[in-house]
Amino acid sequence: MTAPSAVRTASASGGGRTKSKSWLATVPLLAFVILIFGVPLVIILGGTFKREGAFSAANITESLQGAYLTALLGSVKLSALVAVVGALLGTFLAQAVVTSRFRLLREAVLTASGVLSNFGGIPLAFAWIATLGNSGVITKALGLDSAGWSLYNFWGLALVYLYFSIPLMVVVVVPALDGLRPQWREAAQNNGANTWQFWRHVGIPVLTPTLLGGVVLLFGGAFAAYATAAAMVGGTVPLVTLQIANALSGNVLIGHENVALALSLDMIIIAGLVMAVYLPLQRRSARWLR
Image 1 (cartoon, rainbow, N blue to C red):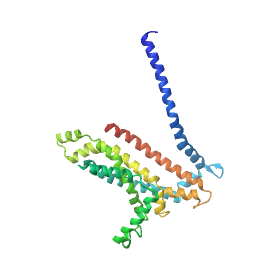
Image 2 (tube, rainbow, N blue to C red):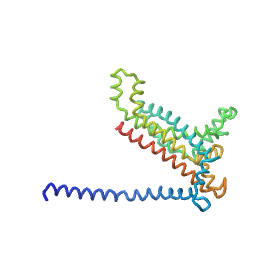
Image 3 (cartoon, rainbow, N blue to C red):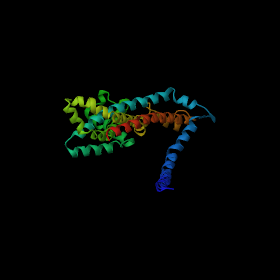
Image 4 (cartoon, helix red, strand yellow):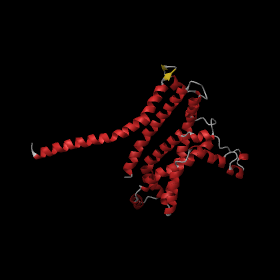
């Protein structure tokens, strides 16, 4: 065997060992993913297609009818509203932060956004009830109760969801805005473009994947939220997460726990569609802003 052939053979064998070791390194991660995601998914699938001890699609059919369908559509409408409005307001706030000359303001807004984007559940609901509920501080101070204001409806819940959705959008879009290169704006100005033309033909097309990805992310966060809505509105606003809790606890019909699993499967399918849109958009955005 010649020297070059020996080198190639050694390299090939070394590369094979490296690949083998890299696969071994992923085994704990794969085991964790299977345990955390795979096992619950198998349980959901097994229960969804089981009705009175026999294989049946009755649970899926029931989950797409009547009050369950109303709750599913209600969650989609609420999540879509929160996603669009939160994305718009969050983007404008992020742009104001990025263009600000005050570094302290930028750091304060980004820190607050990181904290508020993870603030939810029962504490968030109680905070808003104490502020804008029927006996809330601002409600009484401004006389909103006499004007017909109510926090415990679709629009009040959307307002509360925006409280953590707008900061989340700021966290998502600020890195993309930072990635807009000054050379692009200078080149546009040198070619006679004004600010609006720059954003229309350069800025917005480059940011579109990130903006759409942010919309999808906000949609998913609002769609899966449960504790805040349960503490605020109970069954006043039809939401799929609340219906799942009612079905599991037997508050609707005893013995229909598997309908809750079917509703969970419906949510997983919608979440899968959301991620199928989100991930390619993020990869495209990273390629533009690299």
